[in-house]
Length: 184
Image 1 (cartoon, helix red, strand yellow):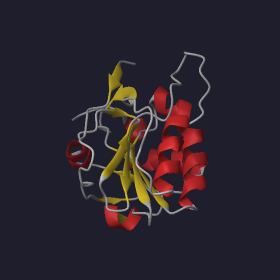
Image 2 (tube, one colour; image 1 turned 45 degrees about the vertical axis):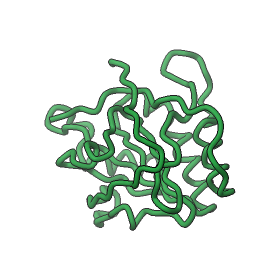
Image 3 (cartoon, rainbow, N blue to C red; image 1 turned 90 degrees about the vertical axis):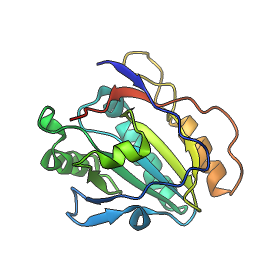
Image 4 (cartoon, rainbow, N blue to C red; image 1 turned 90 degrees about the horizontal axis):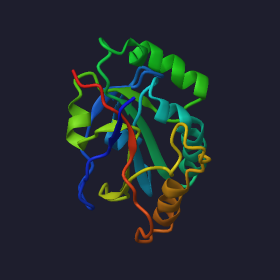
């Protein structure tokens, strides 16, 4: 597993729109469909990446908590499923149901959405404010497979706490780190 860091996105960048099928409900979703009253979290993840597997339970916990506070959540997988069939839509649905995702898990079959976000790795997490402008782009915390650091979600929850209060982001914003997106 090659460690890949996220690319920079300028603060204030408007969230690129998307239109994808949710592998759970089989309904079409766009950014406006998942947008929260106070902000929106867009997460590029996949089923097989050890970095995502490590934080999956915490992502579900964070989403369950902050959705009640007006934050929308969506997960998107953009991996090439011909080379990585474990990330196929059918497997995504099984994965999401097993982990009890409370948010749509979309399949970016053309990889156009990953390119629009300049997503580089899984996980790659973007937080947009209520005006759909980039507020935070970074890791959930310092935990990585094998480093012995507990998954707390502290970096992401700090940003979401401030966003819910409509305060300016302050604090640590480290790049996301994980497996590179599997490009076609």
